Length: 226
Ligand SMILES: *Cc1c(COP(=O)(O)O)cnc(C)c1O
Image (cartoon, rainbow, N blue to C red; front, top):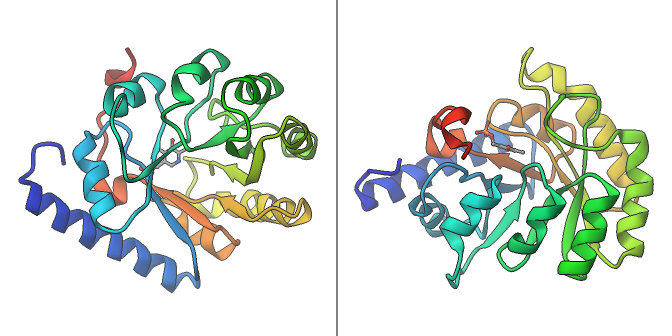
């Protein structure tokens, strides 16, 4: 992706985005947003997604966000979807429009201090995945309330399905997260990635976060950690 001819890259990303929209439609989704996940890909991937019609990109790593977007005026938003550490909030605050991975009180406090009123999603683990962040589903209502009381604009919930065992493994968790989104009166339910977006859409996702279906394989995680 990173070393392609720009016109080819734009055409390829546009074609792959159309294929993702097709998958969503076949799963019965309407009005589902696609958040292109551009972590590990250069800013060219973000521009290609933007030119294909996307208005935001998802990124996971604070250092990468600063290196990629620092000092730029961007016509698209950056959503933070990675594991969020309180000590990274200050540098992320000017660059990130929505924090999708708020999963504990200390992060709520830091966001309220550094970027008052910022839009957020509360990340729920739904019993899925160790090491992907997210609060227990039973703790989510209190965390949502805490974030609201701290003045953050809580738009909804986010969850990451299991990455092993196939997409059906995600269904029960996705259903529970959508039910809780509704019960809390929230609008956004961000769930589903390249491998499990059909199940997520069937269970009521309003936003799928899609990386490899748009940009190809990512380099192994190890090479990304500085
Ligand atoms: C990387 C990532 C994605 C995109 O994953 P793909 O399988 O490449 O679509 C979505 N959500 C989160 C939280 C991620 O870290």
